[in-house]
Length: 325
Image 1 (cartoon, rainbow, N blue to C red):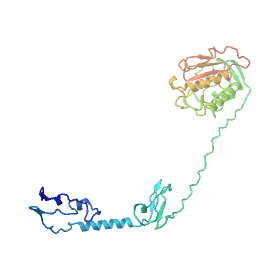
Image 2: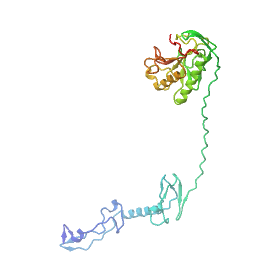
Image 3: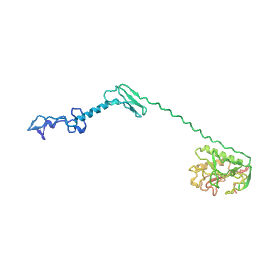
Image 4: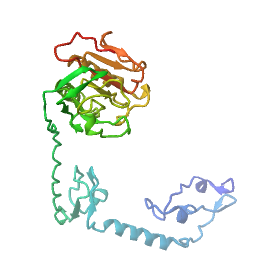
């Protein structure tokens, strides 16, 4: 019986992808090839099947399959282990290495050789130890030598002199010196003489400030007095060794004079101000726009002090003396 031009048995034929059952070939070789050919029929009578031959290229496909199977069976000489898991090739094929298993947590790039029954690491040249680098010695900040003298401050800061003053070193663990005339560091040594109590207060305050703010840059110290005191250019005071200019710390940490109040690190500047007051400063002049605060009689806003605070110490035994001109 014809069914759509085919016999009923031919219409129900099941096609597979191979010459033999359970044998798989590449699509290019077998998409058109069925396990059973269609049986032609005429007037309901099935005709004897025509002889069929393997299609061209089938033998070549079989050769490719055999070559692929031989490659699978080829023994692995070595395998580079990934950082987490080593998978022996025997795990993916039947037979071969007995009791193949996954080896976990192998060191990265470790080489293995597989035999029929064992897995052995491939010997490699020993890795030379990395020589230990010598550690840099910790920087030890030593205080500079100061030739302490028992000075006498004569007169008042805006009209006086200095006898036998003590010189502040050009730099120390907590400070650098700044020349306001040349706008550079360090200052001239001759501009750094002061009363012994003034120099001791500077060294003590800046040492405590650095200990409390180890990440902060050093503090710039400006003019104090001449060796013998007297009038200094660019100053009305600074004549008897009781005045010192301390530049405000900058937000960017640069060791330069801040050019505007916006460049000032106000937290650090206020810390310095408070420490000088605690060390006995009688008055501190600050800029109007610095935002620095303190006792009304001790912290005084003053013109041309936007870049530095002017710290003034009273003469010995005269803490209540008027310190303003």
